[in-house]
Length: 456
Image (cartoon, rainbow, N blue to C red; front, side, top):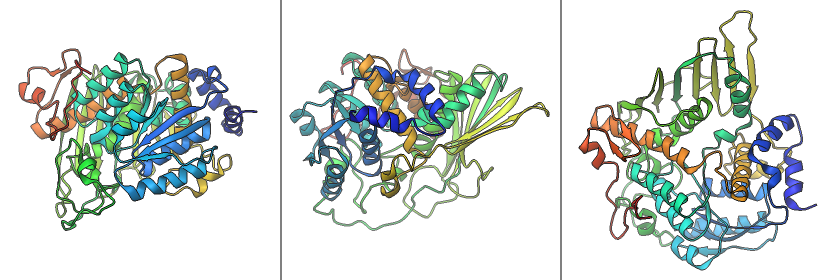
């Protein structure tokens, strides 16, 4: 029995077998080549980059041939872990510049786990080099980057899967299939989404010399160069607009993308947002600690709210979305869902997150692993591979990731400009707003050149 069949059987054991089979059947898993070993590289070997790579190793025969990171310590530590996790036991080739990695290796798949400000250039360069790409969300830091990424994926005919793995989360697949699609909610005419996690780093570290093991110039790349004040990894870079999109881009995109998938929604017709730094004013962070946004559709508003202080409105659902229908309500998160019918004689339905700690015991010892997300990411990887083999679009295709990302970016832009925005994706402009249109592509730091969707 080959590794893929073994992992597939392993995955399908247990109480969620029928649900997983249903989902994988939709993904066309049985069409995957049985003898193929995928040549894989990872750019960005931090927390989530490694997590994505290890989930891929668990479900398909891969050879990790190369790793890239600007932090030599992180890179070497990742190489050791990969050699222990992959079947061949080989240590991948190591690089500090992703361009050299792409030039020197023939790759089937490139995983991108770098900070947001690097996603666009690395995705475009990888598909140009002939690889299919799995890129973390949000896909970009400005709208035109996302447009260029979609254009590149289509021009070079490559599959690009976005790490919005809620679409591959077993209990959320169940909620879509058995609650939303069956009509139990009735007419869904209002959606609320939220995040109340205290996840906004906000310190005041002093400027210090850049350590010898870190190429800070390359880490910064096309983004503005901030004075170095400590390792930017994990949460610190996310607290600055120079590199990311705030809580809106980090957390709203997951919930909004899931809502769009469940309700089959495309681009919002109008986006408005308000917020700012209302409470946590003591540190360097320049992202909003309080923000609300409305993504408008015909006869439907999707409303977002985040606070990085205080308590959640519902302690059971601190990061979640709620679909309000005229026949019932669906509360859902990464951990569970609850359906509450309007009819007092109707049946309430509750489902919890699926864990696979017994099936994949290595999950239990992996540093910083999100155990609740691991099964979803495994399914997401299988869907990615199936799309490559079938030459089809994956469940989190780059275009869907772009719509969700760009909508969040436009919400941030609306907050900054203090007015609603209407984006025209065909003309790639904000309707009737030259100032906002000029802000759809931010200035790159020299010598990096901003990608042009017409010239990828």
